[in-house]
Amino acid sequence: MELKLSIFKKLLQKNEIPSREKISAEFGISDRVAGYYKFAADNARLISGVVNEDTLTIPDDITDDSEKRVLVIGDLHSPFIRHGYLQFCQEVYYKYDCNRVVFIGDIIDNHYSSYHESDPDGHSAGAELLKAKAEIANWYRAFPKAKVCIGNHDAIPSRKAMTAGLSSSWIKTVDEVLDTPDWEFSEEFLIDGNMYCHGTGRKARQRAKGDLISVIQGHYHSESYIEHFVGKHYRIFAMQVGCGVDDKSYAMAYGKHFNKMHINCGVILENGELPLLEFMKL
Image: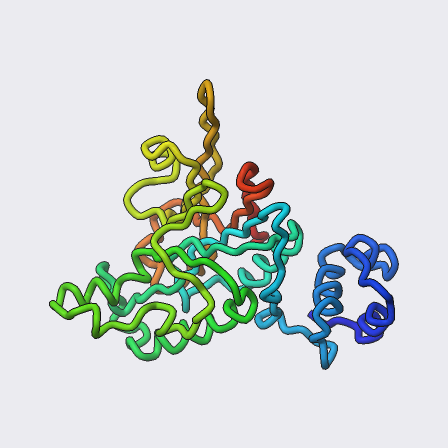
């Protein structure tokens, strides 16, 4: 996306950077594009006047303790990510003024070492990992602070090492391999009393009912929903997030007879009370 340097310079001349709405009205641009200008002006990082959609950076210090607004990014399965999904997630981040980011798991695919059949004509182990690291580097630049749920595909190398009888002392962690030191990896996270996890084993509604806690999860690419469960003294919800996967890639061939993938991401607003799903236009 090209940003006009003239608009950027006018914003920097102001004593205070206006809101996105005011920037949109003053310069006759959309609210979404105004968000990019506000970001650039707030952080004074626009040098050439051009921001690449794959490298637009959300600053580390964007926080608003008065309300947590969490962007929930679906399964990526890098290097088999759907084209444009990164830009879509950035747009949703700005649309809702998010200040937290959670990757719901399976950020890499590890197809070459899958427990399912691997395509013998696909990338070698080394080539696939290099491509995945290059893609994840773009996401890391875009979201330098994030929590990442460890998915079943992320865990394939450590699972294979255990099968081979190797001590975990010999194995690098996911953040070490992907060079993402400021991402926090865990099997699950609690934010505002809600559980974020990848979802292996149970779908969101079963997990929420079984554990009596609001659940946000992914894993099931062809399904997404939000369901609320209301008791006499409590209310919880289950959010099943879709994915950002390229369903035409050879790594996804196993699902060609499944239902169509739900390409979306989630947003949790009002300090964990309001779950929303945003679908990408295909």
